Each structure stands twice: as structure tokens, then as C-alpha cells.
Image 1 (cartoon, helix red, strand yellow):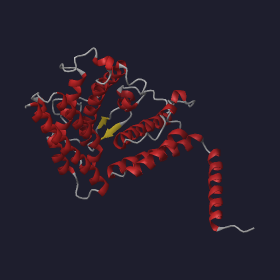
Image 2 (cartoon, helix red, strand yellow; image 1 turned 45 degrees about the vertical axis):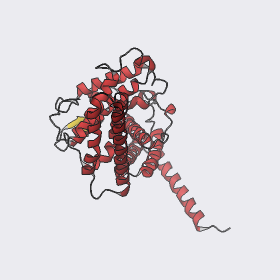
Image 3 (cartoon, one colour; image 1 turned 30 degrees about the vertical axis):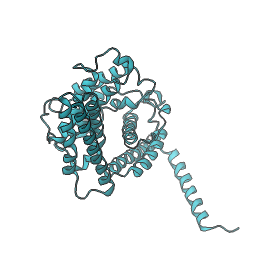
Image 4 (spheres, one colour; image 1 turned 90 degrees about the horizontal axis):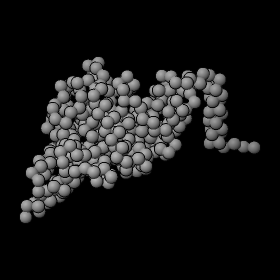
Length: 346
């Protein structure tokens, strides 16, 4: 019997995998999980790197790999329900799942493609919002730590059966407020004043994330009929007014050089900027006769200018293509907004 070289290679790899599995089974399961958790974290780190480079196909492949890690490590199940003893490792694996969830939701939002994981197979029990349990952090260069947004604030993509319930949006809003109060006062996000540590890149990311979440939560709640039936959507303090104010503040902080943004983070901010511009554009269409429409338009006009200043000269082609797409979108939104405002004055 003769064997072709490719067949021998395949057999050799199968034997290697089998022998490796046999060895691992005899070792400590905890050590095995630590090794896989390290690889899981490495895959998520590479997802972020591919996002910065604008390589969407690369992101999708890495997310597919991270999906298998999530299942094998049982990160998709809350540690209390996974049949494992609570430990720092199990908490770490669960936090990695939430990071994966964030990346997956961001990718879905950017590409309009289905998520890489079926959330019906996941336990989406939201983590605590107490500072003592907020493990996900941003580390700054001056050895200070700023708590990052808990993954739960991205719950707008969580539980389609709940997204029409006013109580669901009230809970998200309350959790976001509780989280904000836990942030040190120098870094605490605000719609109006400039934060004391505005020169910190970590703080600037935190500000945009907060404003985006406020706008997303209140904009989504405005689509809930049972919510809007009981509220004046034009009144100050209404969900619509709050979401518009958050979008205005987000674009203002970006366009008027109020915060420090590293040029490598520009692509990371694109979804936030796009959502805020579209939100203000919709508000212009609703209230084109109001004086606020002109100020909202000015905020939109300033975005592509700042983006051009932020775009680094050595940016990859895919990066430039996505930035160019958003800049073109800005131009189209500006054109249509001008038409709407002009038509309302006739």
C-alpha cells in the first residue's frame, strides 16, 4: 500500500493533536483553561487591531475563532450557572466574553451583518455596576485607571423581546447613571462642562462612549409606543430632547478640539460620530423651522473637517476608505439638511 505525501502530513497532524490532547487531559484542567483564556484574550486583542486597521474580513475571521473560545471556556454562561467553582479565572473568562460581546455588537453595527454568535445560547445576565466589581478598565499612561463602560450598556442589542418595554429602557438609563456616579469626578462624563482631565486619551474615549450610550438609550426608548404615548417628546427632559443633547455634545467635543483624540482611534470613533450625525439630521427634518436646526447643521459640517485633521498620513487603504465613506456621508447629510431648512422658510 502506498501513501501520498499530503495524506501522511494529515495523519501526522492528527496524531500530534491526539497526543497533545492526551497530555493535556493528564495535566491540570485549571492550567489548560488558563492557557486557552490567554489565547482567547490574544484573539480579542487582534480583533481590536484589525478594527483599527479597517480590515473588516479579518475581524470577522477572528470573531469566529473567538466564538469557539467562548463556547469551549463556557464564557457564554454565567460562572454561577456554568457548574464551575467561582474563581478569578472564571471571572476573567466571563469578562473576556463581555469584551467579545462588545466587539461583536460593534462589528454588527458597522457592517449590518448577522452577529457571529447565537445569543439564544448565551446567558446575558448583566454584570454588577458597583465599582468594586467593575473589572474592565482603561489604563492611562500616568498610572491612573479610569473605569470603562460596563458591557451592559450595550444591552440595546440584548433581548429583542425586551426592547419594546419602557421598563427595559428605564433600567438601562438607571444603570448608566449609577455607573457615571462611580467614575472619579475629574473623569466623570458630562453633557456640558469640559472634564478636568480632557487631555487624557482614556478620558476622551470615555466621554464619547458615555454620550453615545445616552443618545442610543433615549433614542431607542423614543421608538417605544407605550413610552411616547405618555410623554411630550418635545419637552425639555424628554427622551428625544436628552438624546439630541447627547448627540450635540458628542459632536461638539469631537469637532471643537475639546478633548484629546489619538489618530489611531479615529476609526474606533466612526460609529459614534455617524450615529450622532444621523440623529441630529433626523431632528433637523422634524423641526427644520427651529433655530436649533442651524446649530445642529453647523455641528455636522465640522465633523469631516476634524476627521481630515485626524487622519494620519500612513493610514492603510482600508482605513482611508472607511473614513472617506463617512466624510461623503457627512456631505450628503449636510446637503439634505440645507434643503430641509431652506424649504421650511419658503
